[in-house]
Amino acid sequence: MLRLLSRRLIAAGVLLVVITALTSLLTTLVPDPTHNLLGMTATPEQVAAKRVELGLDRPVSVRYLDWLGGAVQGDLGVSWFTGLPVVETITARLPITVSLAVIATLVSAVTGIAFGMAAAIRRGWLDRALQVAAALGFAVPGMWVALLLVIVFAVQLRWLPATGYVAFAESPADWARSLLLPVVAIAAGSVAAVAAQTRNAVAAVLNQDYVRTLRSRGLPRRRLLLRHVLRNAAPTALTVVSLQFIGLLGGAIIVEQIFAINGLGSLAAAASSRSDIPVVLGVVVVGVLIVLTVNLVVDLLVSWLDPKVRTP
Image 1 (cartoon, rainbow, N blue to C red):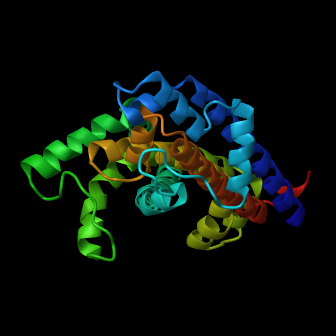
Image 2: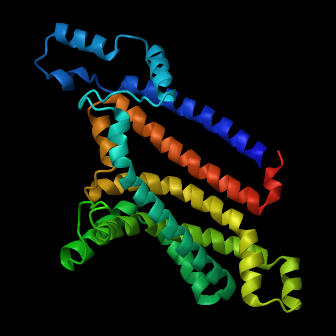
Image 3: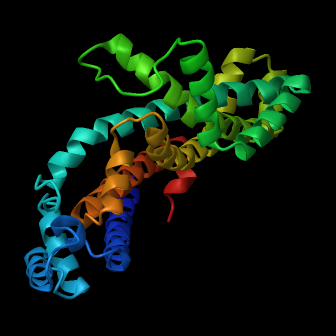
C-alpha cells in the first residue's frame, strides 16, 4: 500500500508540473491584459511600463519558474485586476464548486450503483429501461437539462430558486434549496453512466462459478449480494465514479453560469476573459489538485478491495 501511495504521489506531482507549465505556455496566446487594466487610451509608454510591472517583458519560462517557486510555498500570486491574493480569491469560491461536485458525485454513485445492481439482478424491463436511460444520459447535454429544470421548477412551479447560492452557515434549508436544481442538472447524465457500468460489472460477477457455488450452499441472498457480489464489482464502479467526478467538476463550472452561482466557474470565466493570468493558473492548480486527490483516494480504495492492483 505504501509503495502504491508513493508511486501515485510522484506521478501526481509530475502531472501537476506538466499541466501548469502547459497552461502557462498557453497564456502567451491570450490578449495583452495591459489594455484591460489601463484602458484603450493608454499611451505606449504606459503600456510598456505596465508590462514591466507585471513581468510580461520576461520570457514565459522565467515567469513560470518564478510562479512555481511561489506556488510550492503556497503563494499563487496576486490578481492583476483586484489586487487580492489568488489563494484568498479561490478560497472564497472553492466551497461552492466543491459542494456542487461532491454532492452530485454522491448522488450519482448511490443512485447509479443501486439502479445498476437492480438491473443486473432483476433484468427484464428494468434492464431495458436502464439501457435507454444511459443512452439519453449520454446524448442530452447537461446545459439543456439545467435550462429545463429552471423553466419547470423555478419559473412555472416556483418551487425552487432559479439563481443564487445561500451559504450553509446562513440557512441549511435555503442552502439545500439553492443546490437542488444545480445538483440534479449535473448528476442527471452521470447517474445513467454509473448505473450502466455497475450493471455490467455486477452481471459479470453473478456469472462467476464461486457465486453459483455460494448460492447452492444456501448463503442468504442479501449477504451474497452485499458481501461478495458488490465487493467484487466495486472496483469497476469506483473507477467509473472517479471518472464521472472529473466530468461533474467541469459540469459544475458550466452550470454555475446558468444558475448565477459565484463559484470557480464564474471566477475562471472572468479571469480568462480579461487575461488575469495569476487567477487562471490558480484555478488550474486547484482543479488539478482536486482531481488528483479524488483519483488517489479511489486508487487506494480499489487496492484495498482488490489486492492484485497493488502489484507493480
